Amino acid sequence: MTSSTPTASFVIVANRLPVDRVQGPDGAEVWRRSPGGLVAALEPVMQAVDGAWVGWAGQSDLELKPFVEDGILLLPVTLSAQEVEEYYEGFANDTIWPLYHDVIAPPQFHREWWDAYVRVNRRFAERAARAVSQGGTVWVHDYQLQLVPAFLRELRPDLTIGYFHHIPFPAHGLYAQLPWRDQVLQGLLGADVVGFQRAQDATNFLAAVRRRLRLEVKGSTVSVPWGGPRTTVARAFPISIDTTPYTELAARPDVRARAAEIREGLGNPRKILLGVDRLDYTKGIRHRIKAFGELLDQARLSVEDVTLVQVASPSRERVDAYVQLRDEIELAVARINGDRDTMEHTAIRYLHQGFPREEMVALYLAADVMLVTALRDGMNLVAKEYVAARGDHRGVLVLSEFTGAADELRQAILVNPHDIDGLKDAIMQAVEMPPREQARRMRALRKRVLENDVNAWSRDFLAALENVRSAR
Image 1 (cartoon, rainbow, N blue to C red):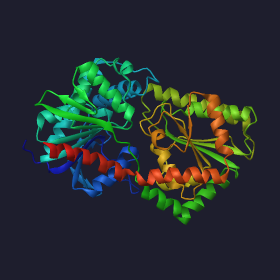
Image 2 (cartoon, helix red, strand yellow):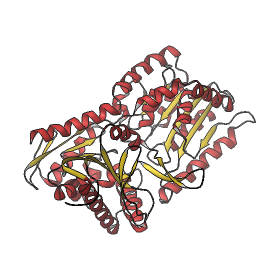
Image 3 (cartoon, rainbow, N blue to C red):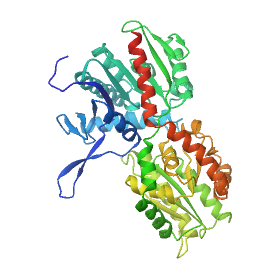
Image 4 (cartoon, rainbow, N blue to C red):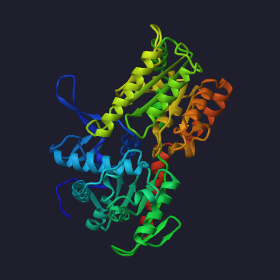
């Protein structure tokens, strides 16, 4: 394919560019690094290679030429307002997201959403095909772009193609509800390597391939008959974080002083519990608040001794399920605070906003207990951020067994968040844990997180891609 678009040997394709267009101090629009786990995970990879990034700029009907930001060539994809509504808010986030998260909320199936998903995935694939040099590598990311690998292989059979799935992949009984189940599997099998967060996710995918498409599966390898006989490898590559910013910030005197300020601002409670999540129904925020409220009602905790800080950053605010969730959580917080607050102490400090990394690390240092109680989560990088920040070997991580992180962070207090009584007992165990026991657990957790950082994750995945290339 010929194009005036600059080419790169390594291209990442993701729904969003790694930057957002925001208004600067002088009123002019500037680009700022995006929040979120995907950008945080991939930024170090892109800084280390001469690569390009294909993605949407986050605003509808925004036509942009390729540009360079922070040393990365960015190749914007334009989406109309209707495509944002149907492809992104519709199929990606109101069909795939709830279906792949164990139908915690009911998925919606609309044919016009699927049509938009196909159309936009093809556009992303065409953009990437123009951007990558002969024999190059393309790494596609996440559930918004499950059809891109196959479209890309049709356009550029010379490429090595990887796909990484950041969210869970459901068991066949749930996946089979998707009207376009076979097309999605075929889309993913366009990749040479399909990566998942957990071994169980890879197993679910391979079972669906075997049952739906009747393809031969041996171990983690699928024999793909179309487009020339070849194979696709599907296995777990647990994602992690760039640990260096968290360890460095946690050691800075100004960040440590800010942590002390946070404690003082909360009335210097004996213990601070912390939850940090996107405002999403998969994160178990309601369960966490319910458990904490019951502990106060039963006088197992008191508002003078313990405060819960809940950071819930805004998410998908035009999707009805998220609007309803925010109303429910804010009502629950208001009821508990109305019943339990004193003039000097508040039960729950609820913050519906995002914070810069420095403030988050200060919060991690201030928190005695980190509550990660997701009902279903591909990985959950907040758990790893908390561990990376705790170079003092203090603090306790309460971690849902339904997160990918639970496979690795076994020294956390593992909980079933649906079991409110069990969650309450876990919170009490964390609040009452002696410093020596905290240190023993945190040392083991930190060893795991620091050794298996984002660089190890990307090296592992890219090595698997290189094995495919060299085997040709």
